[in-house]
Image 1: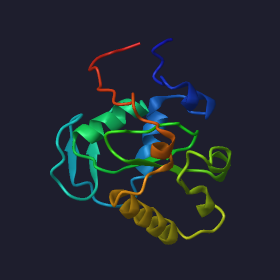
Image 2: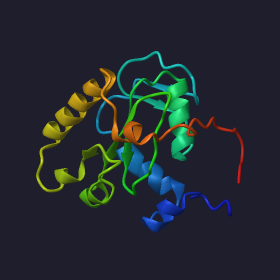
Image 3: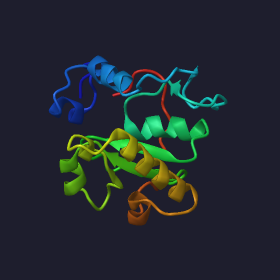
Image 4: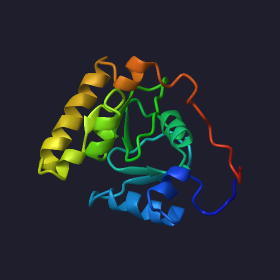
Length: 162
């Protein structure tokens, strides 16, 4: 392994050359909502609305920080099919493309790729919101049904790691 500014092999396979490119894509997905607060890793979240937490780009470590900060339902987006579950907090998968949704139907909860095919964003947002309410009321996500998440609570070790 090398420290080359893009530690994820999946990111490289997807065409990203640096972690900066990944971050720019993430920032673009934030939309136009006002940023209300910025938090350190695992710091308790006290503000409402759109907030940011400083986490690494590694899924289990990032989600662990969010859970430690108070996240009680995790909407997990994936474009390459991360098989991730988060036992301490119910988590559901949003497939960002129809291909990954179809290939991983047993582990993907919602197909967001159909927006490209014409499903209105507002309609998809309502679908996600309704599903989130059902999960908060006790419905199990596909990851939970599969038993994913037992060993995926991974605190961030601050500093360079390889």
